[in-house]
Length: 178
Image (cartoon, rainbow, N blue to C red):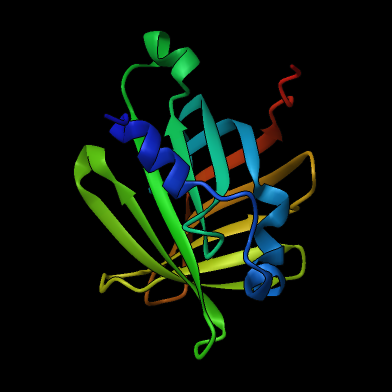
């Protein structure tokens, strides 16, 4: 009998994007891999309320038809110090008629699900939440390179006021040698 976890992992993860998805997913290609995070949470007043270490892992998935990621805060290495947190899972697919990404993030700790529409920009990716709420939420990747990137979670109120909720500074983890 085969190990269900191993079968799921083999079916989930892909070596790369399918040929028809190389162009639209090019914006996510530099993110594939594992990242260490410096995570900052902000209060409604814009002041820092918590800083901790996190981790973020990106991979091609679903026969190269999607990009998935798992972010973990606090990182597994610092949980003994920083306590329990969240393991968030995102799946992103390309929607040709929409000419955009559809993205769904799930946070199992609080049974929270958010859906986004994403567009690539100049060395950036902007994901806008599609859930009905009192404000607009954007998750924005910027300064994307092979060694790092920045990410922020911001809310925009009806009057246009932007409140930063989180910032991540990512540093690529060293590739293990064999």
